[in-house]
Length: 487
Image (cartoon, rainbow, N blue to C red; front, top):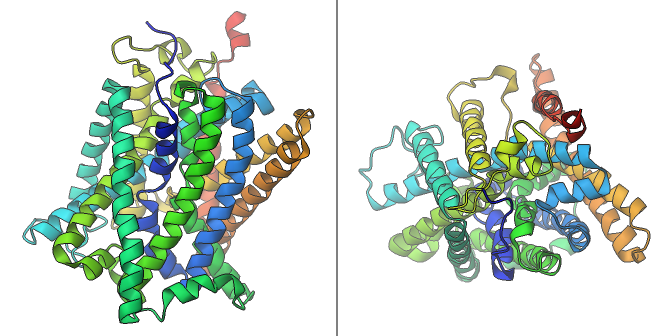
């Protein structure tokens, strides 16, 4: 058995990992959510995208400094190990392997299936679905759920059998996904100006920061909810660090990829959102989803082809997330920690992949897919009060776990200049703290108040944190540290 992963990816692949794992589903999926949360207020929606992007860039810059200093197997786990220690690194890796990455990946498999079914429905109106939803694949249909499982297994097979093929899929999908986004950005703005659909959305966008934005409690609450929704769209960039040991000249290329990728993502999201506002009325977008603007602007044929590109875009994002998922147990076990460490760190000489880690990763993602469907899509929640949004709530803990790393980095790296040692990590602390507060406020405080008025109790954040605590406690029990092995 081989004992290590090869240096096989260049700068282009690293950039595509950043852009590809972020851009693809959230911008389509959450655009409608943001319109609903802001009650169709386009300037507030744009402000939410800007704030979410700033938070991402803050954290990107902080991690870029770490990427220049540390390199081992899996960037996020490497940085936790270097700044705080082995045990924290293990718990960070366990969290990423069992909660954060697979929860997002499961949502992506469902989204990919939904957009593929939507395309098939648009091409053939007689295509059988269990129900209809303005031509959009129903969120709770059994067909969507089953196709999501099939797509997940297909992408898993591609990644497990050939890491090079997975890399080519990632690069191809990244470029394909930019097509509908850029066309919608340009075409939607032109269409909107020509038809005066949204009251000059471009003019609103350029004046947003200068407008007199109300700071009332109501508006702040709405803004926080919208910012948290953008968090899902911006999440995934950290997974590019999961292949840092496979990137050529990683200490140079990974920081470049993180910064360039982050800038590209923010620019694409802003222009796409403005373009969507020009492609259809706000009421139409809230009712039928953001992708309806493709058909409105480009007509049925081209619009539906672009919707197919959206499905491919989601597939690319799913591929990027799964690249991180299947390496999760490997990144833990290669340090001598976790259950069956010797088995999990074995590399298949034929594929060059950690096959056992891959299988465990697939099982965990499949479990989260079942949870996501039962908790969020099934007609009645399968898990009672433990039904929560697994696409957004894990950000509470991932950003909270970043904060100690940034603080310890500032404390340890005394030889670095002030900018790299203090300023950039401090920006990461501020951005992470804001995102944790916004997520708790949006998903915990507001649902609690609504439930209190109805005489019930609902606090999704609390029940998510209970699940988080249980899974992390299991991880602590299974840590099996090297010290105990030596005894």
